[in-house]
Image (tube, rainbow, N blue to C red; front, side, top):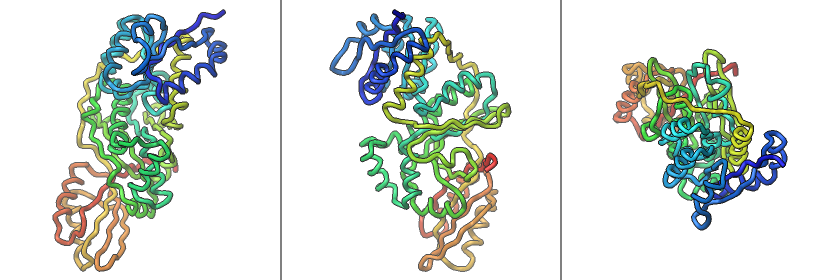
Length: 409
């Protein structure tokens, strides 16, 4: 008989239930690979189980219940007790990861968290393993399956945001209260973790600028399509001079970008470095079986004796708020001579150069859809403020960032 690896499972919802089932189904394979047979020896939910008893009986604690309290204290207690921990809790790690990783280092145990970002996509393992010695320059990610599904369906069907959100809720992709997903807060927590791993500096997710997808209009997607652009909610962490910029916002991508073709509820992350140019990892980003599979992968690594450690955050890189980007700009203006010249003057005065433009007439008004060359965010926002005050404007201007990189597309 092989030595068992005893698992204490905290949480038994969609992911917890799928993980327990997966452990049973894959026990023989895990034993054959690692020499240890996995066994769930205790389950903690709101109505069953005792944490102290489960902790005493376990070799590894798996936390999939979410939230900050009591998860933080439970995981800290487990680590101090010399137990390995696996968690899928991105909010906990984005806010208290450094404290928990320090406790793990002090007690010679592991805190693994592949399932916390992008589901089954192994971006954590790549950053902490294969690319641990590389200087990472930028990470772009589609790290929220709900918003990617909504934007993909809006592009495919021409439906508006509210109708596609309702469909996503019916299909189980979106919660009854979808705010954390559609406002970009979920993505902000995940990109904070990736920035911490890539740049060795702590990033407070509450400080990450977030723009959600609630204001996206079907005609934005349609007009941008004429310009060869597709829309995604992008989480970005990148070096800017001696600092870093971390942000979440909708962005149009040209077809050659590796993230442009990622549709539906899939996630994908592109990592850029001078050492490697770029690599892209993609796959299902959500769902019980998919997340459970990522958790099981961490369990196999621990059972195999593999060692993984997140080093202390030794870099104190300043956070840069003013990054550079190209922009999509949608204007509805009075259709009369001189208006386009007036708009061009405002843009030129603020250093905004136009790359392409589409113009449509509409019952005495005109729609101007432009894509700019890259410009400092502060310059573009200043121009936008002036444009919003023009008498010829018939609606508030709408602006969406454009990512210009085209890796051979």
